[in-house]
Image (spheres, one colour):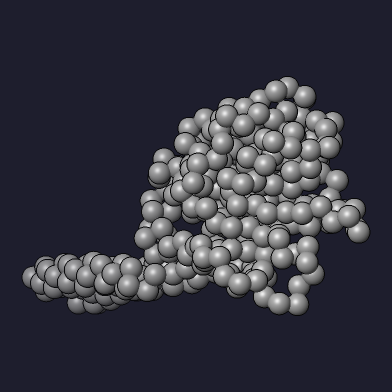
Length: 308
C-alpha cells in the first residue's frame, strides 16, 4: 500500500515538473521570438545615393557617375497613388490602376521587361518572398508590376507574366499578379507618386534605376518601402498585415507587429525593446500565476494521498 502511494506521489511530482518546464519553455520561446530581429542582408542604408529612406533629401555623395545622381527611390509614405492612371494589361486591354485596389493591400513594383539584369532580380526577389508567405496572391493581396519604359508592349508583359505566374504556382496568381505597360504621361504619374527616379543612359542604351518595391493600402496610400532585391518574407507579411488594417493575418502577426515597428530610415522592420520587455513581463506574470496554481494543486493532491 505504501509503495503504491509512493509511486503515485512520484508520478504526480513528475507531472507537475513537466507542466512547470512547459511554462518556462513557452515563456523563453515567446520572448526569443520577439527578440530575434532578422535583418535584410545587402539592403542599402539611407545614406546610399540610390535611396531616400530617411524622408530627407541630403547632398548626394561625391564620386558617382552623373547619371546615378538623378536616380533613386524617395519614400513618400501616406501619399496617394494615381488610381485614375490608365495603362494596358497583358492582353492589351485598357485598365485603370484603381481596378487593382479591390479591398486588399497591393504590392507595387516598377521595372522594365527588357532590362538585362536588375529588374529580373527584383522580380525574382519578389517571387522568392511571395512563395514563402502563406498569404495567397489574388486572395489576400494583389501585385501590380508596371513597366516604366513607354516603348514596351503588352506582348512583353504577357511573356513576363507567364514566366512568373508559372513559377509562383498557386491557383490564384493569374488573377492576382498584373503586368502593365503604359504611355509616358501615365508612367510619369505613378513614378512621381511613389518617388521612383530613373534615367535613360544613352551610352549603355539602358535605364539607370534603383531597385525596390512598395506596399500600398487598399485605398492606394503608400504604406511601406523595401529596398534592394531581397525582401524578407517576415517583413513582407507584416507589411501586408499592417497595410490591410489587420484584416488579414493571425494573432501571432499582431504580436509580431507589437514587437516590431517599421523604420522608414532603413526600409525594414526592427525590434522594439520596450514592447518586447512588456510582452516578457506579461508572460512572466502568467508564468508565476501558473506556477502558484500548480503548487497549490500539488499540495492538495499530496494531502489527499496522505489521507488515502
